[in-house]
Length: 304
Image (cartoon, rainbow, N blue to C red; front, side):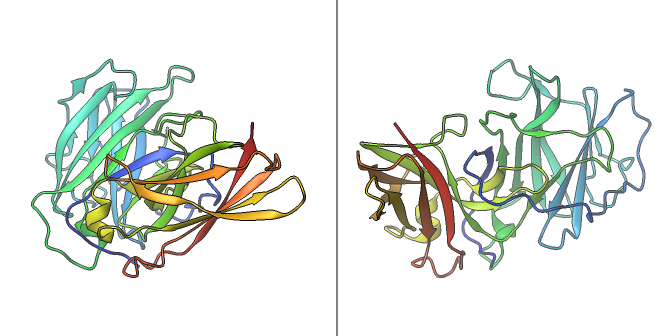
């Protein structure tokens, strides 16, 4: 089920609480019909796909400081307007080294901005920012295409963002306009993910979809959950906690909106007599009937 609402944003991040392996995108067509003569010896590739059937494919190729964007989705990077050489530089620790703003995608009637960073440990070039928004405010429709979608860097222990590949065949695919799912994350994905005994623990719940190829990445709606679901409409979060006596206690977590508006906080208290094993977090959304989102179960370790 795909849905629509007033313009929203989406974000990508990384979480150690991922429970589903990324789907295999080996069958995705990764051919480029026409490529320009690159100025560098090692252009870097990434593929954006739109819709469940990936009928629209938009290539991004970073050639040194020049970015090529397949703006019309026809596989021709040599076309007029596909070469972008204006970017902003940033030395912010959590922001792209190079940020290319407002590249129009006529086929999709949207604008794109994309930023790249370099991993200090590996030297890999990563996409750490990507925002896609309509060129004009879209009408309310029954499709996720009406949303602004924002791919922002992941704050993970493994990598910050999506790596660029050395060849089109090796390129990672970044999906947009997908069916919605529940996502369970940490406060920040870079933090140790656990539930602490004798404390109230926050669990972040978001709505979005997973990213294939790179385990643990997602795209999530980033703004105005209360407008999307309706005020005081929340998912149900129940935690099965193993206890020292061998029994299991099911606890209903309290849920509320984050001040930012684009995620929900579920708070659960873990008793002192909880066993140091994995608790099972059950998340469902029966009150948001329009979303038709399937329930999920996530295992999170209990610790001191």
